[in-house]
Amino acid sequence: MTKELRRLSFVMLAMFLALFASTSYIQVIGAGDLQANSENRRALYDSYEVQRGSIFAGNAVIASSVASDDFYSWNRQYPDAEMWAPVTGYINPVLGSATGLEQAMNSALSGTGGSQFLSRVEQIVSGQPPQGSNVLTSLDPELQQIAWDALDGLEGAVIVMEPDTGRILAMVTSPSYDTNLLASHNTAEVDTEYQRLLDDALNPMYNRAIAGALDPPGSTFKLVVAAAALSSGQFTPESDFDNPSSWTLPGTSTPIYNFDNGTCGAGETATIATALRLSCNIPMAQLAVALGDDAIRAQAEKFGFNTSFELPLASTASVYPRALNDAQTALTGFGQGDVQATPLQMAMVAAGIANGGVVMNPQMVDSVVGADLTVQETFESTEFGAALTPDVAEEMTSMMIANVSSGAASGARIDGVDVAGKTGTAEHGVGDPYTLWFTGFAPADDPEVAVAVMVQNGGGRGQSGTSNGIAAPIAKKIFEAVLSR
Image (tube, rainbow, N blue to C red):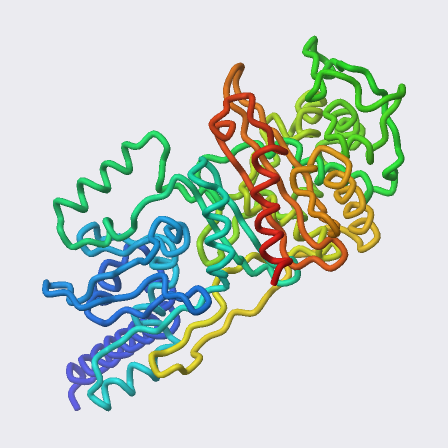
């Protein structure tokens, strides 16, 4: 063999090896990332050539494909679309986009994921038409309906989850939108509807349960501050603080008040337990300053603050800010200032307390099942971490029970059942409507569900709307539904 031929042979061999390595990487190592990449239009277009798998909530089909007589072969349909919009999202070839589980579970639904490889081979060999796999969610259709009906068109969101698994049982957001209109293959209709939704000042496409424009959590955040205090070993539920009717933020001339502008119960001092039961701001602000922002942030982060979760839907991280001075730290003592949270996060706080101090990672997909009913992938519950010791969790539970049985969260009270909860009222600008919160769990002695309710715009009542009158009763309806089973 001449020198030139040998050289050419080596070059050809090197090119072959490089091609083999690159294709192997793309098909094996990088396949998952490429399929999940929202910019991968090829994967999106391929997904329209197969009968896309269905999305289930219990026995209810909440997204399915029907034959279409156009280029895209299949059209997506969503029963009870507005109720399920934050879960399913939509997929549309006209817009070239997908949201919700349609995007997050696209590879499974389109049959192009790694776990569907054998199914694809079988379909090819047997001559069957290509078909995607079904996604079975953790959502409970009965609880979803109850949460949707209870919210009753108010601006806000509801999250229901299992404390010991992190499984999401209901995820509702309002106002919502009709995903069927965005799944249409009529370009003009889709463009018109999409633009209308973008122009809507109420942002109906926001998933307020896990993302969107976040709100301060108000007094529900007092659970985090109290947990930090008890966990420090320096405080007990009976630790007390001065009890004036107004208190000046450190280093400022700005006074703060309790919600009713009075003292926190009778007496010259108020305990942490009393402050939590009556939802008083001043003692909690003093406690926050005594703890310091680093201690509160550390506790908040153990519950999940400053972390984004994938359910597999991506959540916006709730925020406890850094480098706060004493005045700013005092405001965070009652969930104001720059503290921001999603309903998902506040449900995780309640669920962590309910679960003996252990916070679970939230999840809303149980399994992926092929068209032949073969289970191709399962998703197990995982721990995020321990936020509290069991003893502290028990103390927190006792204080939350008192908040419902004889305190500020009486709107969630259920005869014969101990409910653990905490209300919150987040203030905004002067004269602006409040954001109303409730988070809690039931039954307190053997928790089955944790619930977070967030109602914006004062529930349509401006500053007259109260968390106990609007948010807590929504949670109560969900608790009653669970307890009646």
